[in-house]
Image (cartoon, rainbow over all chains, first blue to last red; front, side, top):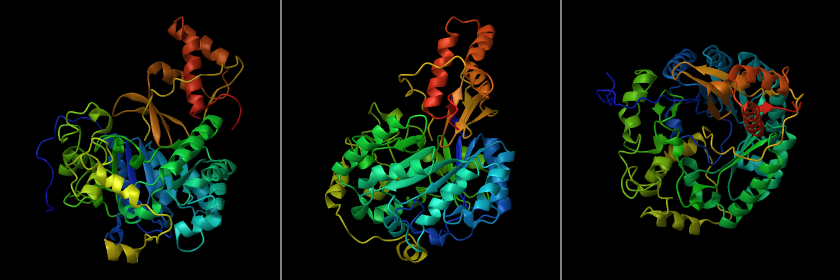
Length: 375
Length: 105
């Protein structure tokens, strides 16, 4: 019997998840130093098999999931990816694939389109080839990414380009937007680094200055207006520079769930960083049981659990106390207000991190050796 | 995941009578059996559509003109504001790239 952390009776909570993230593998040819995979990813090697993913998708659709995101690691490392995509399509799920692009061939792009994949997202690390390769680590990847974007367009996909922003590429935001336009992207995600996991290990090197963030916000805003209806631009001010936290995952266990490469089910993909939480596994529990009854999913759901100053805050229904992973990783306690909030007694920890940010610095790359050393 | 419907109150361009609105290839209409709602799905987000909005989107097949849409739905719903309502909805969806009003791929 698995250790039971299901609560005995379903609560009054009736909402169902809209979106399911499937992290099909933690293996990846890239080594981005801000990867959202857990730092100890190399310790979780027992990957789900294709039939198990097919069952996960069926359980998700029955539970109310309408969108599935296939991500990794690098999902194109799975030979059965088209079969998994096909199952999602047969279940009526809207499917999206996030890839680093280096393994996407012209043939595979067509195969995935035929299998019913709705949307394809290629990550690029920078508009500057040399810097992109440096951030991605390992073998040169920029040219392959450019080709992948082209293959995706030619196969008929609405292409999304995702660029993670930080101190070392933020000043090239104009060139990054121009690159996405040239690639024919319908959507550009300018994702400011979220300082959890690997990015937290590299925080002092990746954190931009306030001047950089403000300039980039204004450039992104103008481009969004100019390209309205042609290319959607997503740019969100990084929360370290905001007064209030974000509604992380639109609330813990409210619309979203993640299944990891080894079958663990998480309220968000970084939740594994929070020590002391237990996670159920799809090998022993159904998604429905886990969604409604897992102790971990119920722990931070809604607003009843909130501490002060959140409990008496008028914003609590807007941000649900912010990000649990950030609370844990910055303060050591997952049950406190997200420290990026200006009303948090621990906001000083964020101010200190901002002061300690330095140009230059040595990056720790996301690879198996570092994972085993740090995780 | 974008489920926010409130931030689309922006200035809009009038839609030509002979325009033939078409749902973008990245967007998909879905009947959500678990919640008994009509959804419009797209990368990283969804909109919950009321039955009227669903009927408008369902007509966005690239063959029916805006004028025909107004006529058809006007007969069906018999409200004074049907034209303005359709125009507003289509403009909002076009701004999000979910409906193509001009023929631009």
